[in-house]
Length: 115
Image: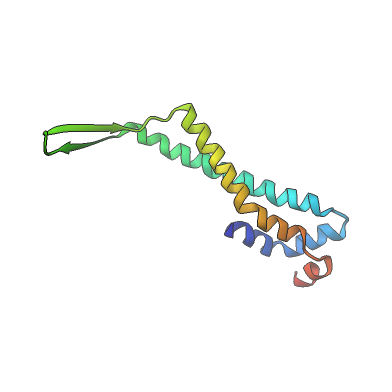
């Protein structure tokens, strides 16, 4: 969310110019929301890439009462991948909707004046 608020703050002049050229509020809202979703998807894919290396490790612990060993292994299945990507997209939507509304509701004159 902070990243998207800073993106809106840095592009105030661009938003004002687009509005002055006749772009509708909905198209600006959609633009910033799509940017948020794409960033979230890329973050989710990067997380899955680095999580895929956890398959090579086995974590084990010893139960000192019975002296037995418990071993755990991370398995990256299709369900885990799908759930992780859906979660990252939902978080991108949740983090991008308020900044996108802020960008869409900007006044044209004030946005151009701030640039």
